[in-house]
Image (cartoon, rainbow, N blue to C red):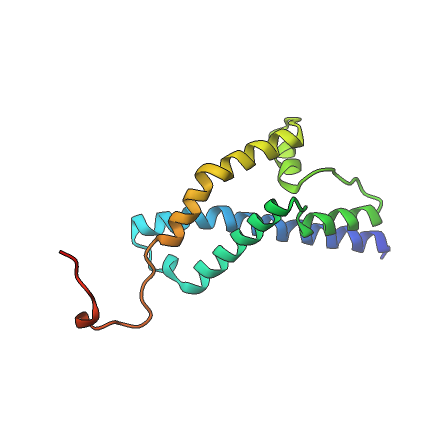
Length: 148
């Protein structure tokens, strides 16, 4: 096989991993709220909640630093080595444009996402951090201070 084909396969694998990461961050938030409404016990899993919070933290840190996601950098580097078309800008901006067949400027999409993230999304994330998590250890009732 040609080396270029290996680069393209690796780039596609990174693209799939990136899509799954984005889906985990976005859908995980909605599943946490749905789990509270529908009393799904699995959304209270400490590993799931910790992993989801860490994933959100990575995205927020990247945003604050103004860094392009490493998945995007790796994918574009591999596509360039294979001689394939390399897109410019962010992963989200590129794929939203591709999926919606709309040529939106990358700065406009970034500004809209940034504005939303700074307002409602931050409150949603903080809301999930405050959502009740099932206790791992049962605390006897006589230790619980009851108000009123």
